[in-house]
Image (cartoon, rainbow, N blue to C red; front, side, top):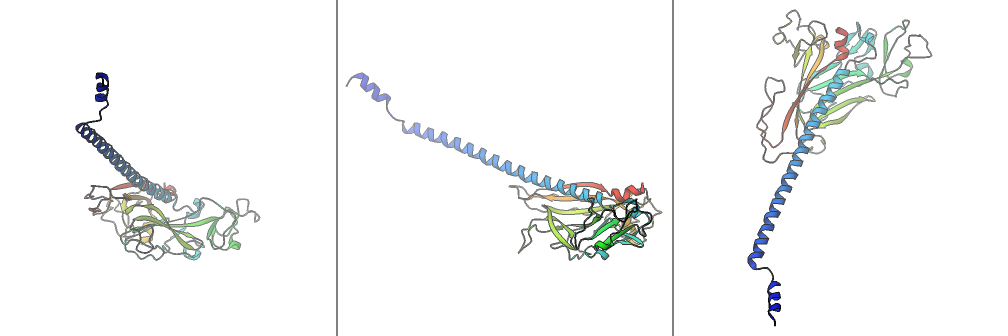
Length: 344
């Protein structure tokens, strides 16, 4: 065997044990770094999604409640409420004659009405014992000419010769209100009665033991019965403050939790206002609502313990909850344009 062959055989030798161990160690270090990066990225993406859902739900609730409050008290025409008596029907009323409308004398229901935690309302399944309740009343902004059987409607008169300013009910033959032309062949449009109740439940899907996800729900009067739907998951707490117009100029002068109570000590800026009048009168003077929402993330965050307290405008703060869910407070003020606008 020549020296050339010997040299070639030396060059074809495999890795030594030390070289193999060094290579394996470097590979393991690289895999560990890549695994750590993947875990960190996945965790960050999950946290971002968790926070995004919380923000989306909180803002969606503010927008939805704000829009509903702004539309509250819309009864087809401003002339309807001029000089009309205001009624405070039961929250769970379903029949047309119990919804607070009457044509003689002209009567319309409260635009908004709130109920304190612990109020028994059988039309709200799963109502959390600590939940406040908000009732919105109005008629639809979309008119129709063909009534649906069993659904209550309001028809406003624009003819000076009609005996009443409007009719309300679920009977098609009763809808005889006319337009400005006073032509019986062309009656005015119908507007469906809208009653929507917002409240918190301890579960989204409440069958069995429930899923334990706090949820804002809405009960809507449709076809003579309340139908409940989930609006947003993770809404753990809600506090509503009602802005009362004490000098009849359309602007809220004082925010209180219960306009039906005597709030003279809280609203001392207008000493001439008599808080001892009927609770219905005080509710009638509500021109805005301050909404405070506590939204909770859908999933817990690794290594997080929520030891914070949250100010929702009550005398006492909410929390601490001492769990792994992240939370945030969302707030806005919504104006009852159909109530405040007439006073300006």
